[in-house]
Image (cartoon, rainbow, N blue to C red; front, side):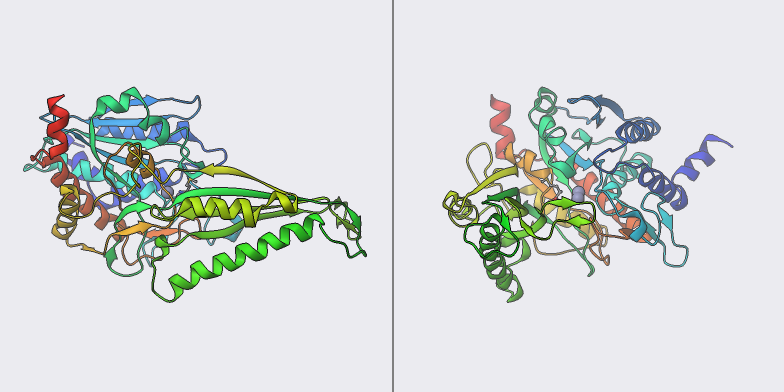
Length: 433
Ligand code: MET
Ligand SMILES: [Zn+2]
Ligand SMILES: [Zn+2]
């Protein structure tokens, strides 16, 4: 076939979908993601698009793929399109289609795969949007440099991925002006856009107490001590949830607390010993804290009510992110006239026939916090309208037409961002230095 027909072929909807499915079929599930296969695939995509590429391995075995589309004016702050390559584990047997088959349902057009929403869709959509822009006669080269980062380990905290990137010398040199990262699907036809996120706090509380006969009623057992905490945590959780149920707060505006595990008991070959009260009991809690919440009072509550030493309890944070950036300000990206990127994004989405919802706080956590921490504006956006929210759930899917529409949205956004010619006052002060 001639070069031209090959080009036409690579831009056809079916080849776009097949590349998406190929990426989805790479098993990058935690805790043993196949990162090298994903990196090889991404580099091959970059080569087919003539993008510059490098693999950063801040931690061995955890490649971070960084792609560059150089702009005409490299002095202007660049655009960073971020996505993570890992996905959460799945209970394979509970899925209608195996999570790494990327099964395409011919009747509905739904593509079933772990990562179809979170967030291999976004990573591939960036690339497909660039493919379209490169092929479009009215836009061949961006004014600003566009970077794409495909980072490892987001699902386990991002410490060996985005966090190290954001602290690296490479990142300094990239002179990033704005970051795009993941958002959430929306069941209605409005895309969701996020200007902040809740900080993760993964807490393990542990109770100890004297062991005893299973028939004895006594005070201060480990189980009793832990249950008192759990009662208190449940009251707090219910009060926060009530604010959401009554409509007075959005999901991202309250502190959520959910139990991730309970661990106690003395194992026996048939299960657990029944007539022995254990001397230790633990609970793991996934807590999410809005950037404007009073996190000091939450920490006091943890120390005084949820794990008081007076009740023989201790606690440990498995993950605890700051709610402040490096200037000591809560991590909130401006979403008014003071941030030109916000208006550009909304307008670009509308130009691609998309509807945009009200700016929200992302209820979970993303790598965007590492960029916001550096004082950069970061916007959470995954173009998935008319889609049930299935991240981390069974049968995660994305419809192929919705995926294709998302590429149009990014084409419009990347074009607008990369062409944006006005220096913000911040850029000017940087340029003076
Ligand atoms: C604790 S890092 C965040 C991991 C994942 N994105 C979550 O929100 O659960
Ligand atoms: Zn994600
Ligand atoms: Zn996730």
